[in-house]
Image (tube, rainbow, N blue to C red; front, side, top):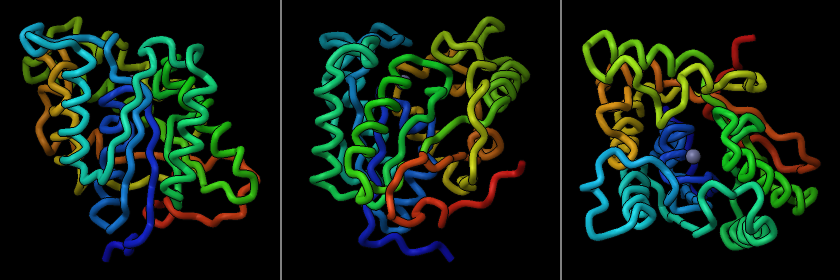
Length: 264
Ligand SMILES: [Zn+2]
């Protein structure tokens, strides 16, 4: 039986709409199902991202449409509250550094999370915006000293995006030169520090896939994720992996309660 997370709050902090679903949508849904209040903070509206079909932003702008997509995905995952900031997509590591730090500090003061989740040092695939959000989150959480909530870094298992792409190709989906938002599949998880524990989210993979597909501007036919079915999502998106950040915090393990030790 699932452990009861009622009364607990988890704050997830990412850079763009869709990061939350790809990085740890299964864990967020599993936490929400176990009773946790999941709060999602997104640093930008993703206005500089790719666009699968110009018709999707007819009469609007990409940032507005992606904000709406994020709210839909968050609802699918069971996220209780979404905080979307309007920092410049593409410049998150350099612009508004102190503002974002302060916003994360304020969110921690307001929601008193029992755990915080963000990118690891590798930013999933060495994306500089993601690395910037990793840095801001680390410094913001660290500023709470011994009171800091445990901070968890999520990474993508190396190799799974390659397998997912090959599965799409095998069924004739996604063109041979397709990629994930222009990112080579082998970049995901490459040279990431190894996880300490993994969370089995195979039972939540269909919801993770549904949440990913809410991000319609990011999920055109060139994206292999558009071509996989729920069984394939279980297989390649069904494990999420984490490491606890080295902080002075005295607060105990939270996310580990859902996890199993990572194979070494
Ligand atoms: Zn991103």
